Image (tube, rainbow, N blue to C red; front, side):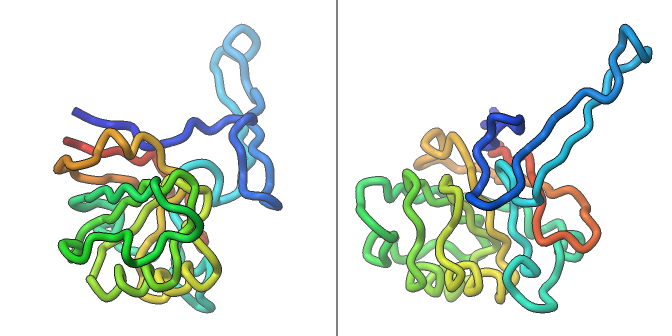
Length: 188
């Protein structure tokens, strides 16, 4: 079974405040041109996407420089929707994260720096959230300085609670990209 964890990309898709809006416009139409094609205009961090180190780290690796293994791995979901404010360390179970893709079901909450430091110390492969942003600049910097990719705007994480799955979310190979939209899925 495959669970789709991605937002659809369209002009109605909400973007982070200040980011460029998404535009999807027809370029060619079958009745006129014999084929159908759209022109896309969007920021690298539109919809469900991944942040590469270059997004916050001077001279950090860009999305095309990260090994593909960083975007695929055994996943685990942590549900912290019951709390308020930033996600704190006492809301996170205390072990079992080494080499895992840790997906946090927040209900829109952001992670605290202490949670980011803990997960990096645990040796996670990647981190993701259902929120539009995983947290503050400091939280981004903690993960990205250790080359831990950050997946944001994930959907359907509640379907994965307590289940074993493989997370897959490959980015576009954008030369010099600070991130990329992804089609994120969980394979159960």
